Length: 493
Image (tube, rainbow, N blue to C red; front, side, top):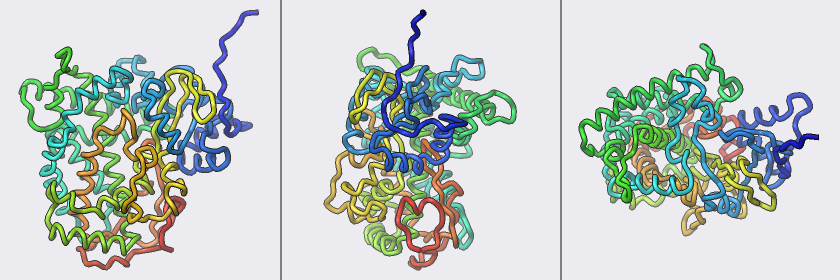
């Protein structure tokens, strides 16, 4: 008898495969509503749960023979996953699509698309992060303040008062313009604007069920459109890099600085492919997350009139209607607490995905090498022993309260903590400070708000609002919100 090597089974508890569709049932339910489905799994099986008992699922890992998918939450499990750098690896944001990078000439861009810091590990990651850190130095970040203010002012000037506007789309445009300006040195309408739109359209296809179920390069299918977009994005970015290389100066944007960067030990510069990978990840990880953080925060304020009133009092007393300086941002404690609480209740990034690089133990269960591990940032933020009345939006809970990085981790933790966290917080604060002093956003009647997305959590149907000049009529438009957002946060009836 010939011996065969069997893929090790996961012993982590979880639901059995369905009788007809098997594991596909659970995969589809996760892709459709990752937060709602896993909340049910956690309630049934505990803080360590398998998507399917026995494994055999593969949502994210580009490696062959994935043993299965595990979800975890809680500070101790967060600590283990985020600090054990040699055990829990990251992989490109393109996920399983990354394994198709050698499939044809059309898939060539997958070698670097959404790779960057996410696609390297161990010493390579440490070296790359050290090389990239100067682009996110405190002084460098603060130098982007004026660009953020100028772009925010431009976007606010275009909002039509008294009419319905989708604030979700407005925030996407705003953060896309900030990202393209700070990363590439060009605002929307210039070359960087085209690049930003391509990034936005491309990431919109990632993580959708149709892409996962039918990765076939045929006209009419999402995967075909995805390959078209990344090819166009590749051409635009290479042209931009060539222009900046020829110029040979640091123009203040991230890309031109990275072109000039040299490794301290070897003196080596980043290749074009490495530049494409890093700047792409910065755009994907920064623009969409900041956009959704802003949208969710504005929504929560619209439904909590007293908090909105108190925040506006703080903003006006310090800023007097003006945009904040870098120094003034430190004088707005309630603004910081509002943002922190918003990202706790409705985290823009609800998951932190890793893959085990070697056999390990987590929460009392053995995990074979290659196991996907998804840390639930959302579920950790909902633990009542950490956050009393966790579904209540209460910025005041942050007064004198300092949770550990493992108890509150919207920007992850450990060696892979978000390199752009300080930039994101500055951007979000500036935009909110300027917008809230000028406008009051009122939710439309019977607004339906459902969460959507796996990598990033966004409102499924946008966020339609009526925009008013700031008139302090905070109680208007409060209540009547429908949708599964009510499962996440307590809202007025």
